[in-house]
Length: 197
Image (cartoon, rainbow, N blue to C red; front, side, top):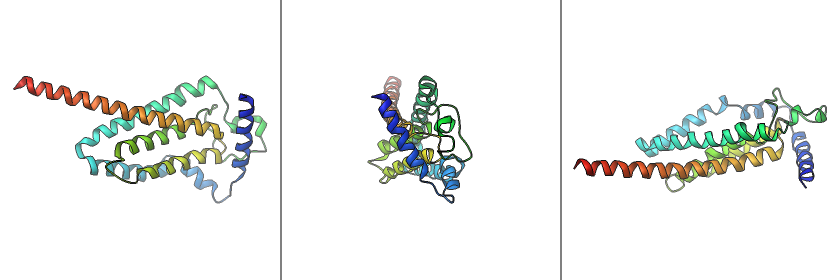
């Protein structure tokens, strides 16, 4: 069963990876990078502070936790545990698959790019769904970044799908933890105020 799923995953990778255009290659490479998204991250910081003011500190704590959980789950645990080579490191695909400029570390299951972007999207959606409309579009951003990893030949489809699932779980856990920590902190502050009275 596992071998069958693995075979389907590889076949889908070869098909998707073959759908590339010369002019799109550097764009996808940029989408997969970090520098191109700095203005986007700056806008997110601005929107968070604008809507929450001092309360935004809790959001930034949550974002840090979400990305920490997702990154450690994929890069810290899953990649060294499963040891599934990236397609660009697999000699079977030499001359068959497309890889643009960079391959990355040896192992690719599961994708940290997918897990980190989906954890951020999930956390912000859960945090702001009642306050600010439109954060759902961040899942399109996360999906685009994830797809770029297949396009560039550094991940199989299963790598990014599982990475996305890990990211969604990490975002939810971070959101839940921040609520619990925030409630506990507020309760303790109120108790201290009562004692001082």
